[in-house]
Amino acid sequence: MGDGCAMPYWSDELSAGGAPPFQEDDMAEMWGESAVRTTADAERGAWFAADRFGLFIHWGLYSQAAGEWGGKRWFGISEWLMRRARIPVDQYAGLAGQFNPVEFDADEWVRLAREAGMRYIIITTKHHDGFAMFSSSASAFNICEATPFARDPIAELADACHRGGIRLGFYYSQFQDWHEPDGAGNDWNFPERGDFGRYLREKALPQIEELLTRYGPVAMIWFDTPGTISAEDSQALYQRVRDLQPGCLVNSRIGNGYGDYATLGDQEVPLVAPDGLWESIDTHNDTWGFATADHDWKSTKEVVGRLIRIASMGGNYVLNVGPDGRGAIPQASAKMLRRAGEWLKRNGTSIFGTVRGAIPLHAWGCSTSRPGIHYLHILNWPEDDTLWVAGVGDQVKSVRELTTGAVLPHHLDQGKLIIALPRELRDPIATVIEIAAERVAAATVQSWLLHPGISNCLEAPFAVLEGCRLGKVQWMERFGDWHHTDVVDGWQAGATAAWDIQVVRPGSYLVGAEYECLPEADETEFELSVGTVCLPFPVLCTGGRFCGRVRFRRERVGVVQLDECGQTSIGIRCMSEKAMACFRLCRLIVSEVDW
Ligand code: JFZ
Image (cartoon, rainbow, N blue to C red; front, side, top):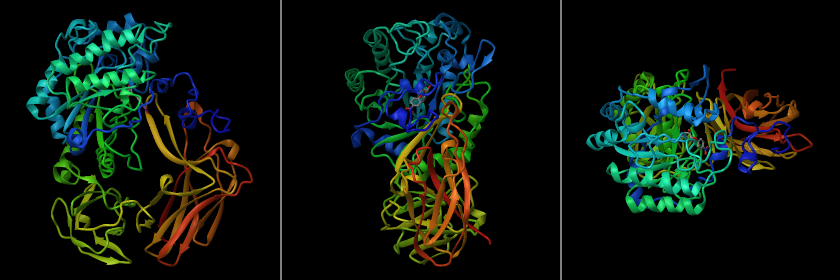
């Protein structure tokens, strides 16, 4: 299991096709191959790249159950209730008789999306439970025929979107269908594998054709969990979409490398920009479908911060809401969307229609760009109200705060642009500085500016590695609540991870490391060095990986005195005589201390 660690864990095993370590977390087996190898040509993908921000809506029969079944609460993503509770098909179908979402108001949903500054909506038309949220001739298990509601919300939403100037896309689970013996994923009613080809021909394909011929222009078909669908079937589905609506985009979860853009892992915000067109998808709390017990709402600052980080890498952010069984969007989500929209009303120029930031990632945040204009998004405000910017060069024509146009005092020092930030202009969500400059340095970070007054994180993907490798870890907290992080792992004896850094203010700096360390590696000696100063330290056990959950800890290593400005390096070395499989480093942290 894994790389020699006693505890099973995700990541390498999963990527190497290993079996997941425990029974319940079996959703990963349905993920299949969904790394996109193609990307839409510029013309078809133009709107996608410009629109940046979309609303995901997970709404279905599971919204009626709301994560509860048989007197038990199933924490985690509620749309998987049927499979997690292994609810027999006929009992689950009984929910349809109670499903009457009379509070559903398509125009209200479109108004809310527009208020949030969102440009498109993707709604679940059939999730893994097989229930169609639209009138379908291919299956009577649909909202029009099987519920007292007896309306077609997809038709109503399509009409509202077309009137409201919002593009509309359809989520469709093409491989899993727990209602059907020939669909995938229900091994409690249908222990014998069915005829998936028949399922495709008789339900999935006809329903996708209904979606593409009955509701006007469709911006995208958002496929999901391709599982073991064949490359031929992925290709046939892709071609059918193209035949019926040539402008309709398809995401990479159609499977087998097909698709017009890449969908990353759930709730994944990368540190390094993927190539081509891509999107990050995110829940507002810890579930896609509505769950009565889930109140773990992300703040507007968190949500807008993720939009900014994703836009700075040229990606799209699709943020989900889960309406309840009455058809109402949770008030917490509506409030967050409106506040996000207020921020975008003031700062949207720095997001929509921009490209990847030409000014590299800094401790204070990240940038987006247009020709000759660069937007600095300050997510972490420096304690001394002084912003240091590397990579801008001496071509700066103007520096303004975006929402007020206030000209900000600035000068060059040590080749860096230094901006005096007026504290009264600080935006509690994110402050945007507009810089007019013709030429800036390459956006890839060569060395990290140690920013005064901010905690500096030196992340795994930007390290120079010897005797160790860059890895990725993903794990679930609650079921389906995925977390992702880049790590340095595979440590050989004497291995090093190092970062080039730029000291711009001499002083005392507290240095720390954030890592995972299994019991086998407890108290192994490492050495943290900054320039010529070496600090030996023991890594300490962070606990096991019960249920595949990874636990990282942020550990202080010590204080170093940096007396000179300029380039130097920081790194850690494994002092163990043997390979250190059970240690994974996320980042080093360096912050000024008043000593
Ligand atoms: C899938 C669904 O199973 C889930 O219910 C939800 O609809 C979500 C948006 O998509 O969940 C996944 C699919 C793929 C990955 C993670 C969760 N993945 O590849 O990391």
